[in-house]
Image (tube, rainbow, N blue to C red; front, side, top):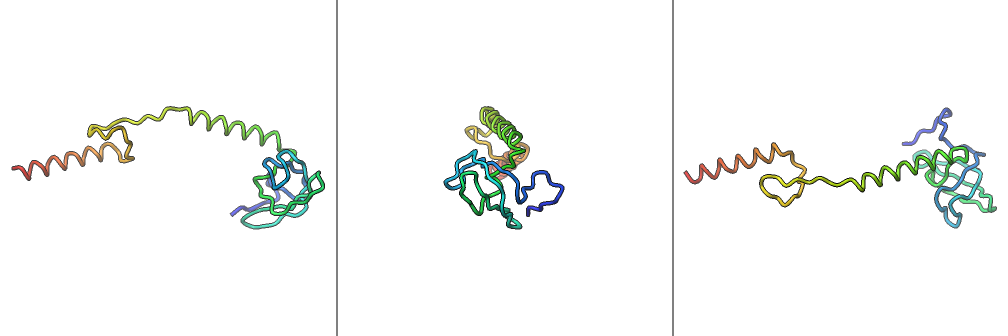
Length: 129
């Protein structure tokens, strides 16, 4: 649940100037507007009067940013994109275990796999002997 407090610098209020950071219906990204109504408890949404003269209701909190925070938003988005690119470019190390499972990582710790192999070997020895 999203709780908004008076001291929250990111909380948008009636009268705040905002910028669309993603298309909102027919409103393109980058369009300025003014918050006219704030509504919702768990899903905060806004009525925005855009500089184009249009009004849009049920604008999601993620679709607009306060104009005063736009540069910080762009920097945060660029940093997140850079982290995602680095993570995607990092090679995934997958080692084949001693059983030769073809390099598939099972998610089971190696010591438990080894314990299972030893138990199967003991059972096979008991069955043979």
